[in-house]
Length: 385
Image 1 (tube, one colour):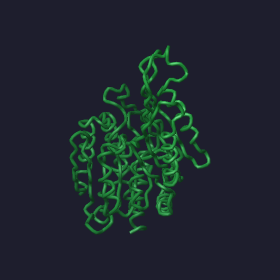
Image 2 (cartoon, helix red, strand yellow):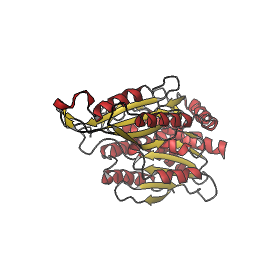
Image 3 (cartoon, one colour):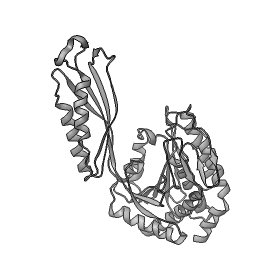
Image 4 (tube, helix red, strand yellow):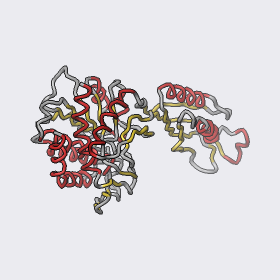
């Protein structure tokens, strides 16, 4: 079985890279429904003939969600859950709209975040189908359309599927040292709005109720919440306010991003941010704080680490590096982990510079990580069922 799966991937490398190019050249910004749906069509076409049954969850504004189930799937038997997203951060008019393969690296929008991961999952499933293993292993493969904007439409779907699953495998990119992700920080976002009293700057004097001045006090206090020991990150990334230098600002806003390792740190950080919002140093000003998003941490649980050990055992057989990683960025696997099942992420190919015009994949990691994914699906099913 091991040899058959590996041989299938080797024999279909050209098809893998052909699909990768198709997906990367198709712009699929999160809010470009037609583009995301086109990516979904390529994936569905590639899985046709594997026996995977497709259920399409229609969306009116975002791309449709795709749910594939293996022939072995049946109600009451927890399946393995595979997750990948079809959207990218690059707008339709982005100049980064090209694909380049120099023989060692492949460049393009979303090549590792995460169209390479989608190709990895698709060809792992095709290899399993060729060996008739999809008839024995219950699998659910979700391709969602909105991860890069926080998965507002697909989160309920993923929560439902996670609750009925045995374990989860995420196909975001692997680390440059062959890392597989066993934990991720959580994330919460906030919008802080400050109100003051408008006036002419020339006559306001020292008693001016400037919303910008109050926001400046709050920004300093917020940034002081960063805690290297507890690995808590607080970042004020966007500020807006005022209409001109000769006018006292009556309004100012800030957008805040926070990261944390534990749910307790999430609660503590939120409490501190709300306290800072409530305490105004400038007379005549007030503030309101709203949480805009929240994802709990993907904790490095014993189950996650046990799943990692199963995967690293297969990597050893393939002669591939495989290290454990705690990653600061969030993904849909944070949501899957809330179900309490073993999860890992970073099963996709290796690369770097995602979210910018230098994004690249190390070429030979696409087939090698596909072999690892196929073998890991089989071994994790045998180990955890």
